[in-house]
Length: 361
Image 1 (tube, one colour):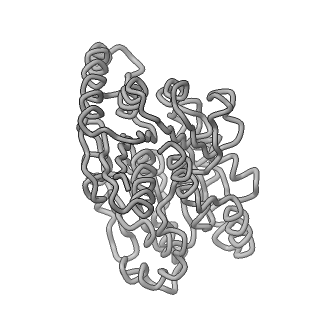
Image 2 (spheres, helix red, strand yellow):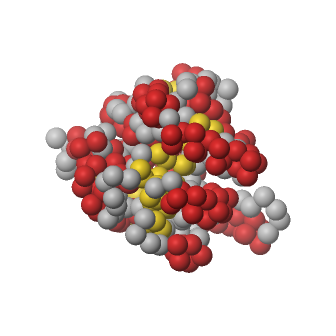
Image 3 (tube, rainbow, N blue to C red):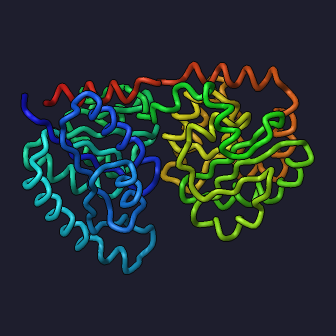
């Protein structure tokens, strides 16, 4: 039997990195003797997170275009040329059977070079509104695995496969981990736990909201796991106390989900997919600073199915405490949101994506 080789690329944020790792883990289950290589952007978080997951990674000298004229932008053509050259070298040396991109700067030159070398490529698009890299790559890709309907206006229709987003398989049965998770965080099993997720880098507006509401939560006997993100940890770590756990980054997502009763979250595509599987009541606060406002669109799809609550950043001052208190007191509403969001889950997305990859071997 021939030994299969796979190159994966996804980075910049956890939303691109973890889908790539989930796909690699599933491929490894099905092809135990396969070889894997990740390609990321130098200085980005994938350079730490991928080795922590047990995979080798090589870094490209690449960064995105800034929206204003900067030195970074003037360097972009040079970085792109260097990354294309390095990608060609990596591909020639490693000789992969299939190359998989889950978004982020490095996946552009890598998949471009793979396509030019005649190696099959798979693009995995997490969002309801694709980024520019994946739109360009889709023209030559062999398959495009998507999580939302109606992406024909961005991608060639015949290549689209609706799979859902890859998620960590350890989230599929979190109920059984609740006691262990509560103990792990040193929480009180008799109090409600609020989990706050602002993304791996953090979300300024959500952090400001939690700081303002913290006493309010504590007075309602709510304990808090607050992921403030690594950009803001120094500023907010002073709020750490027995009922408030302030963390920059969460390694055991299964534990925080298992311990929580209500969740406040951004609406990045990977987070939304995970929250559907987790099935807890969620208040989405989408980031307004993303391309085409795609986080609002991601959250709206869940709200339309009566599976979550959506608050815009502009509504937080007037609405948040009213909405939060009402949800906290209404067990029926919590159950209804949980039940409806769970109906939207695609727990076997990773397996389906791997089936598409296997067709290209």
